Length: 143
Image (cartoon, rainbow, N blue to C red; front, side, top):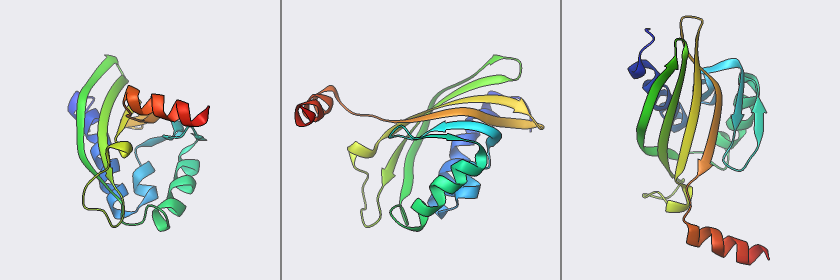
């Protein structure tokens, strides 16, 4: 593998493929051993093992059969030798559904480092994409 933008941009695609297989170890394979991952609802996971331990029970139950679709990488760039950033967007199709719900659209930000002869995710944040109107409605419900 080389230190290219294309190699960095391939990381989310491999994660999506592993998700679609229900394979938490494969999903976490591109994370550094000491990576930090922030899940869409704010859970902070530290370390590849914690990322696997968080996801596999979900893949075995609530998310079993879910699919990540329509993945796109709006940008990926090397910010300094050995350091890169990837922004990725993806949609989730839940089990039993044939179309993704807009409420499950996500954007992901990956900070990558070149180590062990490959790009590894040092930190990642997965956030839901919601409209301002949806946020206002949620605020009203919470009040």
